Length: 252
Picture 1 (tube, one colour):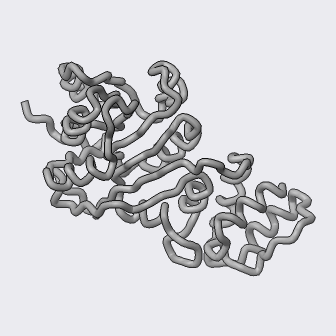
Picture 2 (cartoon, helix red, strand yellow):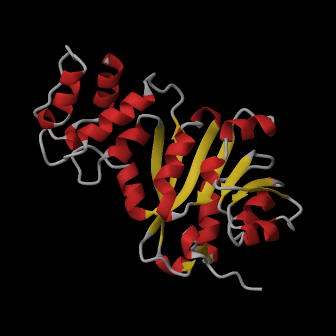
Picture 3 (cartoon, one colour):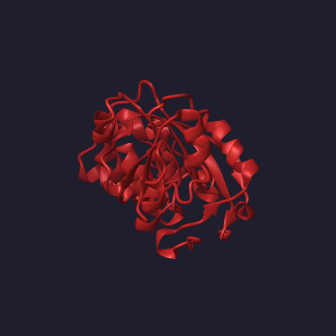
């Protein structure tokens, strides 16, 4: 029976064979890689991946799809909301030091998934995700551009990221109303040591009124914390490079 895409799960199924091949080539799965696919759906990406890997772990929230996927002999199906999956525990259960994570992420919760995985980055080798193109533009954006913002800073301090492939709406059924792309995220080998929650709070304050100079937002926040160092608040949030945000939170 044909599966009807469910709007509440943000389902858009990849159907373009050439695009699927390009994504798999970008991921470059090797036999026995401990890989986890988020939201396998109708297995368009799952099947070519498992053919190269031999075995694949998949996380699927849709009960009907999870039941179908269990019929595949080479899949370990985790029926769950991905935001409830403990990836650190999953790596331990699979007895591996690092996981490779892939997926066509639901556009309505892509940012929460990215931040959920950030909490488990110590057990991640790399991540390849299909996302809304404008989200990826924000993830990889450089300072002093309109796309540079909270998402850019909060991911770039921890990952090296590349926009690796453009995916048009016609590649899906049903076609989304937006362009998509594939991003590669590789955790930095020697990341800076920071208080992540404090960094989140600081960056949120900095970008809360992005058209205003930082003295109106971050300046007051720093003042309240008795900050005695030097930081140029006569700039807008988008003009401050990631390295300066990192240095500032470390000084706190």
